[in-house]
Length: 603
Image (cartoon, rainbow, N blue to C red):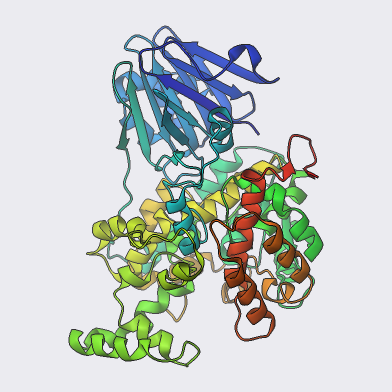
């Protein structure tokens, strides 16, 4: 799987890219103020005519519809875009269904346009430095070419809040990631400007439940069919949940021979392989499963981090790497169920507003008093969290699906802590837009703009790419979102469960044993491993990582000791530290060599 990098220069023909020294398999396109370099691979489609040079990096699922509109029969999406762009201009980006980065150079006006897909499946990094605007699908390409090795301390502080680096930040100073559903414009003599071409919104419509059920079934089948597109070597990831099972069940109707892939751990309670096998049997598809050991898990982390480019403390990232690796031995493409939870209300925390409903009837003065009293209670006292959550406005307590450290905690361990920086700097602008909507819709909106792109899509895209397999996610689609956005909240969170309407739409399509199971995702026995199998490894990472300028290591050691003593489950917090430390070893210390096919530890 390749990448691309482009550089625009203000009034100069110089380039940071030495086109006489490009790597094997790389291609270049040069213009008076623009240089574009990319690794040629199956995701690249390029087209040039007298007016435009178009490069499309990614996948398009509605090429046929766009080609018909353009009046041509080509399957080259770059050519289709070149035909449509003169009349459609920026409106064209919103019409593309897929995961993509597209660049369009108007050679006559010497203006460059670039766009990122609706949800941000494909990343677009950029830096403005030395009179140039340089952009790439790979952050590492930019940091290498500009020799950027300075830490962005604001981004680091946000990482310890979110367990990932929220966009538009990266941990490398000056390197930024462009928003999804955004395009840039660079005229020859002007500065780069950024513009939104699509903004998700919720517009609930009251209609019969049966109408929604039929529409969900129709849009999902259509999107799965488009992503399969007659491809023989396409498989599917299968867990024990509704989302992947619905995708597999519908995909089987299109390709009865589709293979499915699952991973798990041998420790009881931390594997959905048995459920996946049962599901595969009942659906009538082959299932190939792999069990991951603790040693396999941690031995792969440096290479996984190299592929991620940014630290991610979600333990389920590693199983996703292994299921992608297993699948790559059989297929080149895989369907997956990401995106359903954000769109259809699948996270258990979305039920919180209902559980806290009683606080809506308590006057503000009394809520303030209750909160003050709750803050004085011991941290392990039953009921403290309930009182604090009930008396704290949503925008102050909810920053996404997995809040990690509070401000007071970060101040205790983060040596670069800045009191003027808050996680509300990230979420506040989104709350300003969505504050009039029901609380659950607000939570969904925050997750779509933070957790979904910073965690869910990051790990899906990077872990599949690391293994040379292309992942396709039928739920991550603007048409699916537009349908889901019209479904009222009381149909999503209902019957004491989440994504209720999706469950009802799945009934009769997927096996009954999947419908009412508790959501697990990719469960990882991290809390057990850190006490035993991975304890020595964790201590070694803490000792060896050269992060003393940023983190109070004694805080981390004490946290690990308290976890091992059974005082509380601190595994996710410890893991957040460890993943930053490994990231620092990989990108800042150069401890690993990834120039060879198999990465090795230096020294």
